[in-house]
Image 1: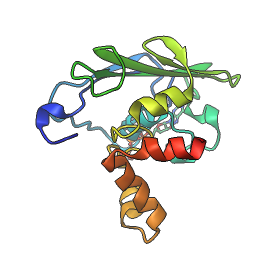
Image 2 (image 1 turned 30 degrees about the vertical axis):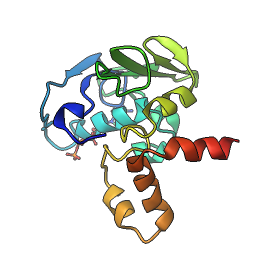
Image 3 (image 1 turned 180 degrees about the horizontal axis):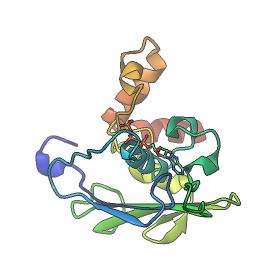
Length: 185
Ligand code: ATP
């Protein structure tokens, strides 16, 4: 799937609002090529990759460096009140139909209110978490994909636990959907 450079899936944009340290609506535009994010310690660099995993359906709050779901919502600072919800949208170019959906641009959105109310959307249409996981299955991008290499991920790849390694190889081989369907049936 990733043989030619032009086959790489293009992440165009990330929009954050109320997510961790990003209280104000913040839009990150990614141009083709490599993007590096730099900044002082604690300025929110890792929060960006947390946001990408969260919007793609991450359920493990621990892996997002929190203790409970609402820890991802802006908690306030000395001179700014906390917020009632967090929303993240991620936009992929889909001109080449890398994603199995008939849109040339795909926006996935996840929203969480402090009350616990939550929602997922594909191109603004409400959907289930399952739809999002299926959309990115076998692309290497999703929650369980290998395109986000966070702390501990390398350990997982090198781990002695064959089950952990197998998940990564299955994703790369593009056969996760068959395993999931078998488990479902
Ligand atoms: P380093 O270079 O040290 O790895 P970083 O730039 O990756 O730092 P992050 O870990 O992304 O920084 O950001 C940490 C900051 O995010 C901390 O200042 C923390 O207070 C803030 N933060 C995390 N969760 C929330 C929240 N819910 N509300 C407000 N701020 C938050």
